[in-house]
Length: 161
Image (cartoon, rainbow, N blue to C red; front, top):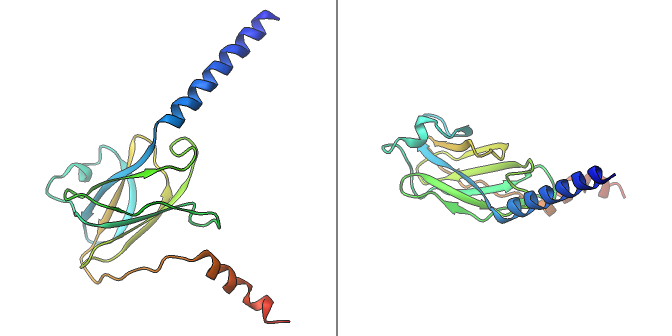
């Protein structure tokens, strides 16, 4: 009986330490914006050579990130800008980010470049986000409004009355 109590005590202590450690460190979505032939967003290994090329980076790129973009309770993260080197780090303050699985959508815009949008799972420590922007026509992409979407979906049912 004492062995069981001791194991339970050790398990409780390890669980408490895990919760404290995961709660204290803030997850950051990091990566780089570069120029390329096609605008896209992808998750790559942190050792990908494109992330470390000092001659290919786009600064001043506006980055908009949404967690769980397909859900009604999606989370809009604060907008960010890439540094002059193209690198960026976006703080993700959602509960369990980096520990639990979250889907994310990232949109990148810069004048004179096509907009890049991509959906992915929040990457682990060994991965980074690579945003590729192609020269071309830029245009703002309208953010989705949950209330407007809901009203449009309900219109067929409301008009029958």
